[in-house]
Amino acid sequence: MTSRRITREEMVEQSVTDYLRNAIFNERQYPAARVELRDAFVESEFEGPLDKNYLAIGFNFDEGGVPAEMGSDLIFRQYVIEVWVIGLSAQEGRNLANAVRDVMEAEAVVPLKDITQPGAPVIDHLLVDPVRAQRQPVPEPKPWQEFLWVVTIPVIDEYFARSA
Image: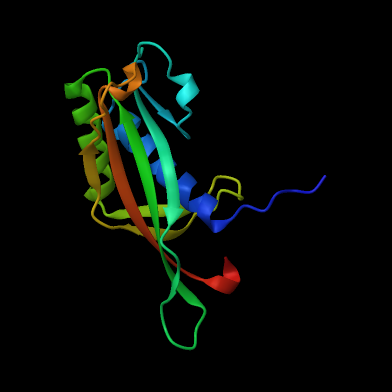
């Protein structure tokens, strides 16, 4: 059996998810009985009325890397991570969307963890660009779409291409 190589992109996404999870549930103390963080959004899992609020990691993509300095393999790459906030009510959805935005902007730095190593040690840091929280009105919404926000989190990663 061959082991799968973990890409730097996976480490970025997992580091942001872990950072958000810790901040929402431990620092801000949102109750897990009322809010659930999911690693992905799967529409078929949201049929019928909601039983709690959800934070779902949505579409993730990078803006393309650019050389950071001449004559070096140092790369500057921006990743965009979207968190879908699916609220039980307008008030709860707005509150959670703003909490996610505030958490990500508070330090403006997310520890990048090496998830291939035991204990996932911090190996670098990601810079957080301005975060946007926006309500997504949907005509004739399904129950899960009624109080939907998208929080867009751009994070910047600088790394040497040969070591990634």
